[in-house]
Amino acid sequence: MADDAILQADAQVSTPEPDAKNPRNLAEWVDVLSQQGMPIFTHTLRSISGMAADRQSSASELANVILQDAAMTAKLLRIANSPYYNTQAKSISTVSRAVVLLGFDAVRSLALSIAVVESAARGANKARLAADMARAIHAAVQARAFAQQRRDRSPEEVFIATLLFSLGRLAFWGHTSEVADRLNAELEQPGADPVVLERELLGFAFDELSLQLAREWRLGTLVENALEGKGEADPRVSNVELARELALTAEQGWDTPEMKQLLSRLAENLYLPVNDVEQMVVRNAGEAQKAAACFGAGDASELIPLPQKPRARVRREAEDEPGQINRFPEPDPMLQLKILREVTSLVEGRFDFNLMLEMVLEGIYRGVGMDRTLFALLSRDRSQLKARYVLGWDQQALRQHFAFEVSPVKANIFLHVLDSHEPCWISRESDSRLLGLVTDEVRYVTGEAPFMAMPILIQNRAIGLFYADRLPSRRPLREDDYSSFRHFGQQANMALSLLYQGR
Image 1 (cartoon, helix red, strand yellow):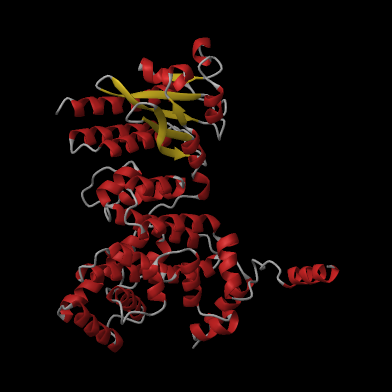
Image 2 (cartoon, rainbow, N blue to C red):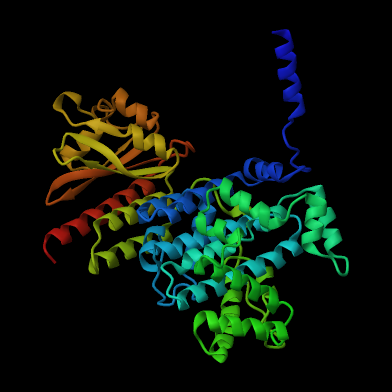
């Protein structure tokens, strides 16, 4: 037994935790980047990529994942309202509306792109990151255009696979390490061979790191197939390969013999005349510059090559500084007004009940500035009140615990709101009769923090309610917050009233 214990102790000593500054092999790099270097990015990427693979994922689920990240939400809505994406110039103030107007695939593509750019932007090797990001975005835009020409079922998926092809390279340069500094210095030498240097200093090539990260983070088969070089067997992968080759070749010049040969191959693959292909890829390069600027990668935007000399400088989009995004959304009257207007326009157009609820809930969360918000719905037999949509902090727990049996013998404040058709704002100063309805079951959900509830009615019959609180931040609720909260609830009730009047 003693010998066993010694052996176990020796085994533990022989397998120390990887040094974040000096990972020794491919496995340690994957572990460091996943667990220590990019944990938040990894979680977001996994969540959104999983939805890319699951065609049954709903728009509300995608919006929910994005809304958990305030910085991503702000950037996504800024990009969604830019001329590059929002060609119809329709105001988009909620993620839910962005999914409807731009499409599920487009918003998922935007979110993943933002996640990649955001992770790379924090790296120490800025120049190297900018060059690799420029090549990745240029290739991704070209690949999407090739996929569209081939009538691919999801050009946005091809865009993302091409962008994520460079994930290992971007993750490496975005992570501070001693070997990164050495590799960067070696690559600056004339005649340096990147692949040879990668293997000498790291023991693996960046494409191998990308492949292992793609498998570890479950980024989908298209990314893996592209990294495994399966272009001959899969035309979607060949889009990725050709686009990457084009982006790399363009950096050597648009008039080289290599570029002319590549354009001829592209013409054969896309069944287009060479002149048409040449015009298309040059146009795509310009679009890639705009896309990079949109995503906040201004330095990368300026490195994407165009045939024109001199090349026009692309205006950089203002980037969100880390300190600008609060952990909890603050009340924003202008955003409230924008969202309320968009809810009104939704009512005037093709009405979507679920989208209306999601937009109102997002207005309460981001506009009124709440920590936790939900819409709870009565079951068909009106025997249960359960959370249906949840935004903000503690989502899983709140969704699980906000479930109440509707029964006269189990009266509580939420059932009172449904019966009375009246909203409530519960705090220590509330009427004692209302406080008496805050049961232990309710306190378990609310954490004894102040909260607000508003009934949702159809033909003067309650079907559910909105709930909001600031339990995680412990920020106070004020009269203005309650007034705004009621306003969103009233807008939802007005929309449902108009719907059922048969307009």
